[in-house]
Length: 62
Image (cartoon, rainbow, N blue to C red):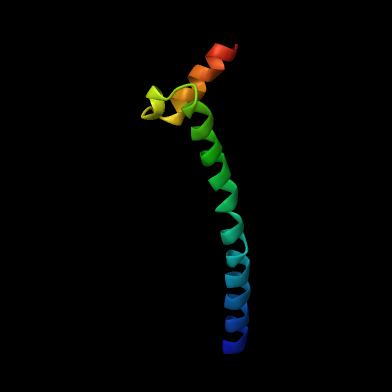
């Protein structure tokens, strides 16, 4: 039974290891692009949250 438990734990760890390294790179890009875009048109509003900048940009575009 110990061998089975070990195999199960190894499989879980392997599955958890796969999504872990694949997850950081994905969410890391959006935040990098979001502050870059509003940083140009809103250099003074950099302190404001990205949510407000997005909302303002959406209203201006419409």
